[in-house]
Length: 374
Image (cartoon, rainbow, N blue to C red; front, side):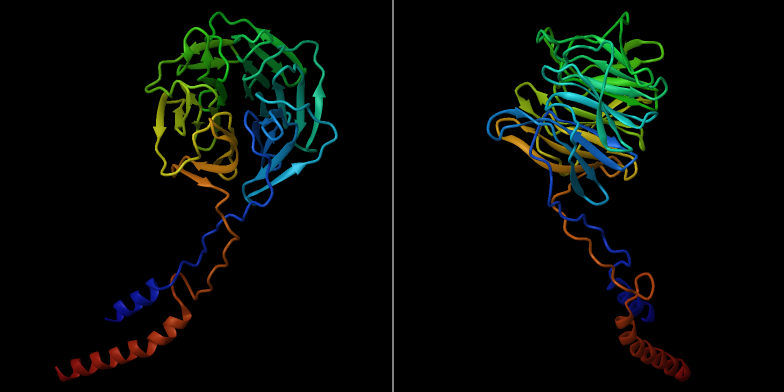
């Protein structure tokens, strides 16, 4: 009986560690799609640039914002020097130079660097460049210190299958001519998979074969493309978004367009096992294309912002995804963090314990009397 009373006192008490609920987002970027997003580990923030918006008619954006997961807050960077407004460009973080390299977009051929130390943009002047590419893919190989570009729409509004490398040390672009390449496409995605030391590419739309679900890897050391035959395949998609979860060593893919419809599917590629697996979280962002996606290794979450819901417009939502728990979290449903409850020890409320002590003492006396009579 004594143990039952103590158990009741213990169970009635909330945990010592209060659940942290994210603070409300009060300021955020405009709704947009076809923007680009990369994680800046120097400042522990995700960075987005550009995209398109429909307010006042379709137009590209040229703003730079950062998102802090720990503070659940967006901050606009007011910068005098910055890339021109654009959409359907791509950018990627380069760890050896602590910068984000941006390339592409509709009608532009310039290369830009975002210095994560100073949080400033500067244009990179190179002797040559890949020319007009939009809806392209970029990924960074830390071993070779190069940014790899593949695919996209070219200046003639045709899909491309060219491969280029930007050397972060020499600041020059070089076209690569591998013997085998993926089909020419746009709206594809590519990330560097640290577990296999290669770029992983999938999805995109081709003129000859429509939307794709093939998987290719690019080895920047050997300058070779290799098509894989993974167990399982992602959807036949264009304009999804993919990022690399470096903590769990998985490629995380979300959204995209199948046929005429967007989807809210979450796919995971395991490079070491060469498997694609569709995940089924209870909740997820809306079915969208052209979202922004970046992985935050400090907090072990994938961050998503914005996107285009087909036939329903643009979004300004912020979501995070945990691979380990397979949970998408809407970061705009939060409130201020709660205050922990003060307790004597794990699970003991001092008030309840004070009230229970006389009862426990009385029970002990009764038990002793009964035993003496026996």
